[in-house]
Length: 187
View 1: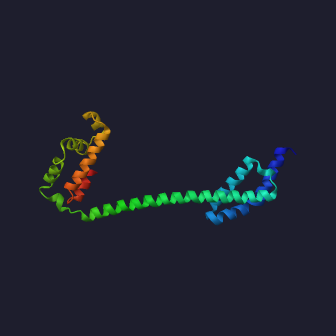
View 2 (view 1 turned 120 degrees about the horizontal axis):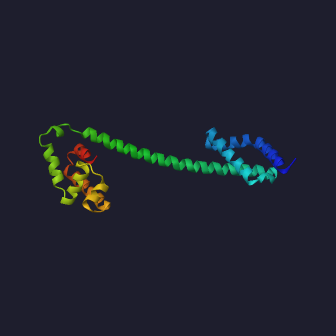
């Protein structure tokens, strides 16, 4: 029997002897059977690649438990980070939904049926500083992209962005009593 065959046979014996115990150990901590299986498979793959088969069975047993423990810790750390990220995204999503809900509740259809609504909008836009108004109209009324506006006016994209921010801020102040209308203008 050559050395490779002997190592393969020895590895198979170790795998058969310890796999179930290692999987049960991992599953106590990671809960899902599939995750425990993946962790133990990774440990045995590392063992094969590093050729640790020369360790005595006592050391091998300790190595396997330590390796599984460490992989479980890494797995749980990763899951914790992923869960915190998902929780934050869910929280942001819920805040956005609440804002939209409150905006719709505050929505008064009468503001759109008032004869002077166009005047209110025109006055709000006209109250913007000249360059700010020009950029806002090009973007929101004419539908031009910020890059196109910067090229046409021969200004930086940063200037376009900052002028849009100023327009939003001023319109928010001017149209504070018309929140749904403001949302319509901004979107």
